[in-house]
Length: 131
Image (cartoon, rainbow, N blue to C red; front, side, top):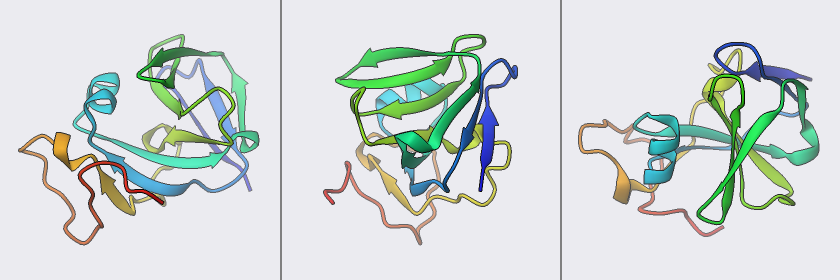
């Protein structure tokens, strides 16, 4: 199985060799600002299951984490806790077909903008839940 995705201009492309897990909507301030959006939907895959097929993402270290953006156009693509993390998060909206990957929970509600409507059926957490 392969899922494909990439940036808005097509200069950066990637393939996922497994389905994203831990699908979340993150409302934290850092995600909002990095995407210029009210929240980001993330999905996690094992690092080895992410293959960059075109372009080279630009990595930005901030708040003890690493965010990757398409160097060509700035699309936010990936998130890592460390450069050696076993898992890497992918912006679900950057997939060519994001429709099958609805969020399963909502995190960082303490930072949610007041005009964002939530799906009340999803588990929600003020910060990141401890697993």
